[in-house]
Length: 340
Image 1 (cartoon, rainbow, N blue to C red):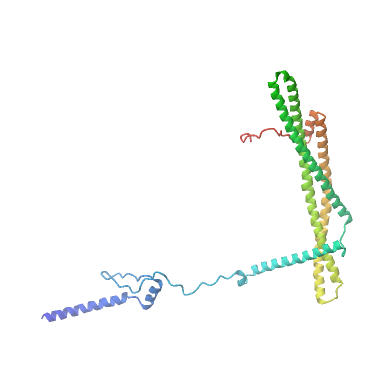
Image 2: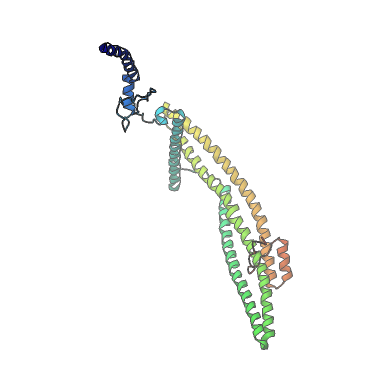
């Protein structure tokens, strides 16, 4: 009887064991999942059944393996054949090539001109005006240098007169026996200082105006002149090249080169004629402006210097008022930031 009970219990337990085995097989990962677990190094999913702790099906790895496909080497735009990059590079190369050819032709033309082996385009009237302008700038630069020296020396004279007047005034307070004489001299030096500051304002205005004329107005015209001279050399270089190709044998290659030289010659001829016209116009207006400016400045210089050395303070102040010049005393203190 006991054996029957045991057999019956074993029969009832066997289906439960079989169910547990089936559940364990279901929870066990497939071969491909197991492979993925080994490669990725991740733990298997935790089963949801209570009271069951599954054994790990794969060992956790601390370092992952390298990916199956290696990253490809970055390809530059030029290797991909980007048309914009290629076009830009070709344009730069073409620019350098044209510049090198032009520089060679111009250098050759300039050397041959100095050696007398080729002709050059000459505008006698224009070149005489240009040379006269350069001579005028040299002479005005000398006037500017001397005027600056005069203003600098006179500034120190005014400073010395001011210090001397202060010294006389101080001695007048400490020397009663010579007080009247010291006061006369102190007052004279104060008047000279005041008039000297007025003349110094006129001199500085004269120096500033001549400096603007000499180093800005004239220099701007001379810059255009230099551009004109460069264009003249280029024009003559391509003109000489065209003349040589015109005398060459009539072959297909020479004909193509002749057409190209004719094209470059026309371009440089147009540029040369335009700059020549610009130089002529600028020289004309510069001469008119120079006469107007120097007439005003020379009148100011004469009236101010004459009035100062003749002791005519009224005429000196009237001269500065006529030319709208504001005099700032060199001995005056700088205004405070509150006044500004």
